[in-house]
Image 1 (cartoon, rainbow, N blue to C red):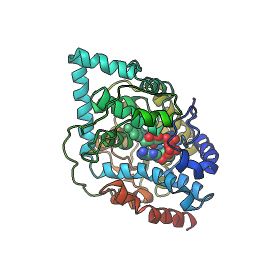
Image 2 (image 1 turned 90 degrees about the vertical axis):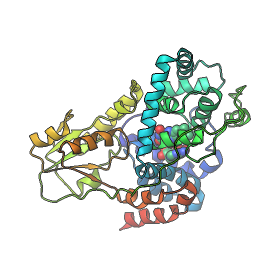
Image 3 (image 1 turned 30 degrees about the horizontal axis):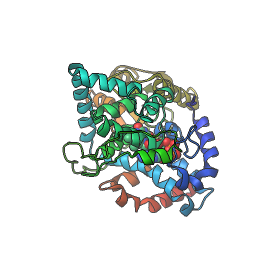
Image 4 (image 1 turned 90 degrees about the horizontal axis):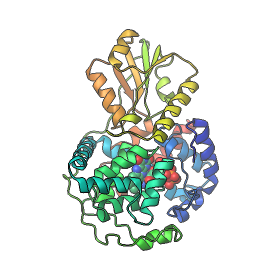
Length: 392
Ligand SMILES: Cc1cc2nc3c(=O)[nH]c(=O)nc-3n(C[C@H](O)[C@H](O)[C@H](O)COP(=O)(O)OP(=O)(O)OC[C@H]3O[C@@H](n4cnc5c(N)ncnc54)[C@H](O)[C@@H]3O)c2cc1C
């Protein structure tokens, strides 16, 4: 499966999927070759080559909201996870520390190292699991149900450290995303919803893979893994304001490659800088699938900007801003993750950074204070807001 890292390819996939969105609720759980019953849009949405807002509007242009309720809810899971993590950034830091701790352990514990390597290579002998490990490494994608089964088997049957599994995903998933991935793994492990784990059952795997896989010996009980309690939510971000008329630079990063809403406030940037991000998703080497897609997505974005300004990839963003005489530097809001870490470090070193928050994120994220089921009640209002904004 070669995925084209362009906005045009993402829009074409969206157009193909829209007619099927009505059948999504009934068929989405089937993990079948070619993944015919899901959209496959996540590589484009994750990098915002195509935005969540565009996906919601395209689906509602063709279907009544009641006919696509489940699909819209899934799109809003991404929004919810991002908002949840924005208000609890320490959970990302805890995850990064757990990855380092896990990697230290595999250096010193030979048995753990062998088990971890076998799991990553798809050589455990567990039917299904080995296929998904190889499918992920080869294609950069896994169906949602396969992600859940894989993570559950990793944590509870193989009893490997959960953070190393999340890291394996982040190294290989083209859509690898700090919020959806970290919190998805925590959810399976019983850390996110305290006390509630996800247990992969052989019968469920057989049913939803149409009997391609019938694993034996899966753990039947899954006690929640130990972790600190969820922190209380901090304030939701509000975004920085942009001052008109200043000499302004633009920063692009992998988290939002549709910077039109930023350029509406700060047109004609004097210089553009690209922040590396995908390579920082893991302390280990990130796969070529991921790096190639992200690089291609950035190239596509720069091409869409039409050579608006000189482009650089500076090691030191604060120096770059000074060299170009920039009074402010704007960028789409970088949610918690590697690009944000780099931007905040550069801000601390003097970069006059203004991260602009999308109106839809500003409207949705503050509601991610509790569980998804509370957030879900807000979805109709958030969708109405999107539709009103489009027709204004
Ligand atoms: C352990 C685990 C790890 C995950 N890691 C990631 C990750 O790193 N990056 C990532 O983008 N998603 C992740 N997900 C969520 C989900 O599996 C993928 O977003 C989805 O499978 C992408 O395929 P699709 O575009 O065909 O989805 P579809 O089923 O067609 O859904 C449409 C869109 O809705 C959103 N969506 C659907 N399901 C979820 C979900 N459970 N959580 C959040 N958003 C969702 C995505 O934007 C997706 O593109 C993870 C889930 C689990 C259980």
